[in-house]
Image 1: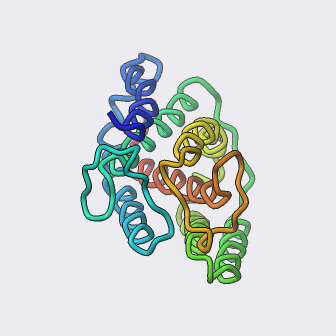
Image 2: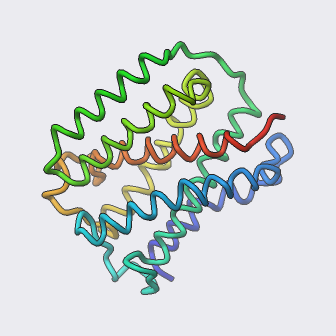
Length: 222
């Protein structure tokens, strides 16, 4: 079994095991989860395909099964299933076990952050991966500022992002340390936390934010 596949299985194992846990009953949310995976996951897989072909990053065959579709290994496709499955489980646990608090986050604050991220993307235009991750954050704040302010104003959202960074640090370190995924130095800043490029933190933020946005669009109310 490939090391990357083992990481995928480790990511999903806990949330999958507790999908029928009575306080959360996560299995009831699978239709909304599938919608988020199908929509946002397709966009991010297309992004992955593009940057892989372009050479921003590469996958080490030593740690893979060797099964590829287009330019991406099977394990990478599974990544875009197990990550939203597990992280949105965190969101549902927060809803079940904590009290929501309103966060003061105005439309203008979201739009200002959008402009800031787009400006950063323009400033680092020559660094392909840096440009893309900053632009993706800018796009999220633009969309959220116009249509998703309820998400921005919820403590559940911010705690979901914050808590998700804990497994992110562990599993992304496991991916980038051997490395299973390596990065073109010309496409990134070069600053790393543990073995993780700083850009990956922005990538994770935009990806998880968009996954949750799509999920909430069809989740329904309790």
